[in-house]
Image (cartoon, rainbow, N blue to C red):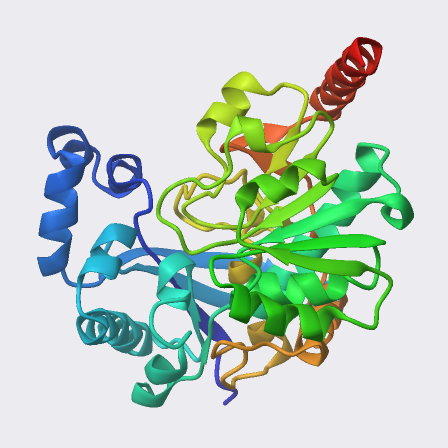
Length: 368
C-alpha cells in the first residue's frame, strides 16, 4: 500500500488580536495584545485545520496537509531564550508527525528564529523546510511583474534591497544584480553588507551598500525583508512612482505609506495560486486558493515527493531557488496577483498609482 503524500505547515499570530480572533473570536475580543503575548508562552501547539484539494497540474496527484499554530507571537519569540522557542516549534513538529505529516514547513518567524530551521530539522524525524527558496523566487517574480505593470523597464531601473544581509534578501540581491544597472544594498552592518556586495558583483549592476535607509529614495524598485518587529520604511523614504515589494512578516513598510503616498505601489510579495480545488479550512487572510510562497514550497515538495530537509539554514543557493521554481511551475503553482496591506491590488489601482506618480513627478520638475 502506498504511503499517503502529506505535509504540515506551522503558522503563528503576527497581529495578535486579529490572528487569535480568526480561531478564537472571544479570546481575540477580550484579551489585550499584551495579555496574548504573555499567555502565549504557556499555550501548547494548536491544531488549526486540514488542508485538502492540492492537486498537481502535471501528474494529477493530490496531497493532504494540516495547519498547526505555534502560539508564540514575534515579540514573544524575540524575548524568550532561543532554546525555549526551539522546544515549542519541535512540539509543533511532533504534533505534525502524530497527524501523519511527512514534511514540515516553517512559517513566518518560526523559519528565521535561531539558525533558520537547522536545529529543528535535527530534532525531528520528519524533514523540514523553511520555504525561503520559493519565497526568494516569487519575490523577484513579483518585483518583475510589478515593474512591468508600473511601466518601469528593468534594464533602466535602479533597485534597492533592504535587509540585504538576511537569507532571503541576500539571494534576491544576487538575482537583481544581474537584471538592473543600479543596486543599493541596505542593512545595519557595513561589514556584512560588503560581503553581500561582493557576491553581487560581476552582474549588470553597479552595486553600493549603505546603512542609511534614506538611500533608497532614489530607487525605482525596492525589495525589503528584514526581521524587524516594527516598520522601517516610512512615506518620506520613497520617491513618486516607486515600487516596494515587502516580503517581511511583520511588514517592513509603515501603514502610513498607504495613508500618505497614493503615488507609490506597495505589494506584500506575491500571492501564489495553488493548483487544484484547495480548501485550507482556515482563513489566514488570503483569497480562496491563494497562499504565501513559503506555504507553496512545502506543498510543491510534497507533490514532487521530495521528503527531505530542503530550505534550511542561513544560506540558500541560487541553484536551489531555480530548482524549486521549476518544481513549483511543473505542478501548477504561479504568481497570482498582488496584495497591499492585506487587500487585493487591482489593475485600476495600479493605473491610479501611475497617474499620481506622473503628476507628482511633473510638479517636481516644474518647480526646479
